[in-house]
Amino acid sequence: MIIKGRAWKFRDDVNTDEIIPAKFLALTTAGELGPHCMEGIEPGFSKKMAKGDIIVAGKNFGCGSSREHAPLSLKGCGVSCVIAESFARIFFRNSINIGLPIFESAQAGKAIENGDEIEVDASKGEIRNLTKNKTYKSKPMPGFMEELISAGGLMKWVAKKK
Amino acid sequence: MGYTITEKILSAHTDAKSISPGDLIECKVDLGLGNDITAPLAIAEFERTGAKKVYDNRKIAIVPDHFAPAKDIRSAENLRTLRDFAKKYGIKYYYEIGCMGIEHALLPEEGLTMPGDLIIGADSHTCTYGAVGAFSTGVGSTDLAAVFVRGRLWFKVPEQMKFVYTGRLNKWVGGKDLILFTIGDIGVDGALYKSMEFTGEAISRLPMDDRFAMCNMAIEAGGKNGIIAPDRITLEYVKQTAKKSKKKWKVYKSDKDAEYCEVKEYDVTKLEPQVAFPSLPSNAKPVSQAKGIRIDQSVIGSCTNGRISDLRIAAKVLKGKKVHKDVRCIVFPATQAVYLQAMKEGLIEIFVKAGCAVSTPTCGPCLGGHMGVLAAGEVSVATTNRNFVGRMGHLKSEVYLSNPAVAAASAVKGKIAHPEEVI
Image (tube, rainbow over all chains, first blue to last red; front, side, top):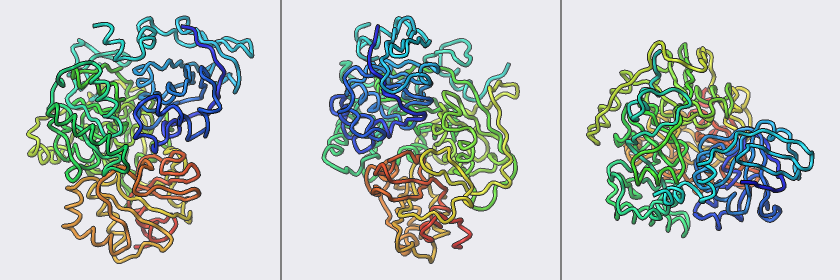
C-alpha cells in the first residue's frame, strides 16, 4: 500500500472533541461527519484540504472520548492516513477497525512540516518526505492489517474471511 | 514472578496459558456497554454481519444518556434505534428515560459491575468500574459490535503502573483531587496504553464514590484501565448492589512480587483541592492558585462526580447560601436513585433554594451537548472530567475542573474559591 499526499501538521494531544465536536455526534456515517472533520481545532478544514491529504501530529493523537466518529470523520472528508509521534489507545483501535491507515513515527511526527509532500510505503514502514528529501522509519504494517484496511475495516474483513 | 490484579483478571478470561505485557490475547467479556452516541454505530455494524441474535442478551447494557432526553430530532432517532434494538434482541439491561442514569454511575449501582469481571464499553470512561476491582476499559463501536456477535474481544496485555498514596487527606479533598493531582504529575499520556493500579493507606480509607471518581479519570492520563483491589469498603458496597442483580464476584489482588513498569508514591497529607486549568486535565494546580478566576457557570454532576456523596458535599457548601447573580449553577444527579436519595435528604431543596437548576440525569452539559452549553468567552467550573478546547460549547469558552466542594463554593462566590471561603 502506497499513500501519497500533502501534510497538515498538528500539535500534541489533539483530542477527539477537536477532531469532531460533540454537537455533530448525532450524525452517524462517514459521509455526514466528513464535512465537520477537525472543526474543533482547524475550522473549515474539510473545505481547505484536498482529498488524499495526510494529517501529521505530535504525541497522543486522538486522546479523549471513544467516539468512533473521530476516525470516521477523517475518512469521510478524504484524509488518506494519519502519522503521529504516538496515538491514544482507543483512537488507534478505532482507526484500524474502520479502515483508516495510521502510522506511528516519532521521527516523522517531529520533522514533517505543514505542506510537505509525503509518501508512505505501508508494508516497508517507510515515510518519505518528498519536499525535504528525507526518509523516516515507522513500523511496517503487518500483512493482515493491510488486508483489513484495504477491505474497509474489521467487520468487512471478518465477513470476507468467513 | 507474581501477577497484578489486572493480569489476573485478564488471565482468568482467556484461554492463553500464560500472559505478559505486550501479548495479544482474546478474552471472554462479562458485560458490553453502549450508549446513544456509540451504540447506533455498533448496531449498524452488527446488523451488517447478518447475525440473527446477539451472543448473550444478559451480557449487554444499553444506556441512553448522552443526548437524552432527546435534544433534537436526530438524537431522538438515535434513541429510537437503541430502543428498537433492545426490544428486538431482548437486551436485559436497557434503561429507558425515567429509569436511566449516567451509565458509569448506573451500572455499578445496578450491581452489573462486579469484582473480577471483564467489562468493555463503547465509552472512554468505562474504566470507572475498576473501582470495584473489575478490569474495565473503553473501546469503540466496532469493538462493541464484535462483542454483540461473539461475546469476546482481543486485548493487548497492558504494562502495569502502580500509584501509592500515603498520608491522610485534608478536609474538602477527595478522590477527584487525587486523580487530578496524579494526571498533573504524569501528563495526559503519562499512562498511555498502561494499567493504573491505585493503592496505599489514603486509598484504603477512601469511600466508594471517591474511588469511582479516580478510576473514571484513568483515561485522562491515557490509561487502559484504572483499578483498586477490593477491600472491606468494596465488599460492603457490592454485597448491597448484588442483591439487585444476583451477580457473583471474585476477588483478585496483586501479588507482592508482581512486576510494575513504574511505581509512583505520593504523600497526600498536604494536598489542597485541585483545579485543572484549561484546556487539559493535566493542568492541575492547587485551588489557592486559581482563586479569583471569574466564572459564568458551575456544573455539579457527571459520571465523575454525580453520586450521592458528591451532592452531599455540594449541599453542605450551598446550604442557606445563594448562587452568585452572575452565575448559573447546574446540578445533575447521576442516576434516579441518587436523585431520590438527594430528595429524601433534603439536598434538592437546598439546591433549588440556593438558585441552582437541578436536571434529570444526563451527560449533556459535560460534553457540550445540551443542558448547559457555553457561549464564546464564557467560563465554567465543572466537576466533570474533560476541559478540552470547546468541550462544553464554543471553541472560545473555557472549563476548569474541580471537586464538588470547590464547584459549589465557586458558584456562590462568582469566582473560583476554596470551600472554607463560603462556609
